[in-house]
Image 1: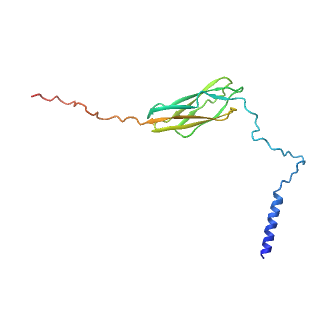
Image 2: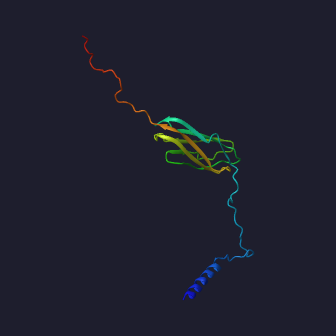
Image 3: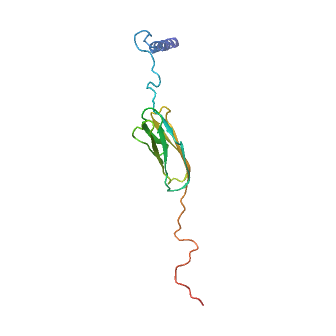
Length: 166
């Protein structure tokens, strides 16, 4: 019984091996060449950033969290930015939607939500047709809590009636 089961199992494996083989031969008239990984021609557009990092330093909670990254198309064809993605919801980038002609400049605006207290280290990934590939922009800094306003100032003189002198 064991021999029958072993024979059936080996026959099944052998038949799977036969059918797994490529049934086309090299000279059968089919195109067997593999396409290169990047079959698109290389782009002639390129992006050069004025800076890759913006340091807010120390700012107060609720302060203006906007900054700009200036860039230039140093290539020979229009630069098209297809996507700008912040690393989280607190970092909102705004990229140009129109193609940037060769030699022209534009800006990528980034707004950080400064109502979040603590250290800032966020990134924005810029995807485009630039031959240099994606660009990673970084914002960093520290958001300190806004000082609490006192309802009644300390050491305030009473505003009541004057006291009598004796």
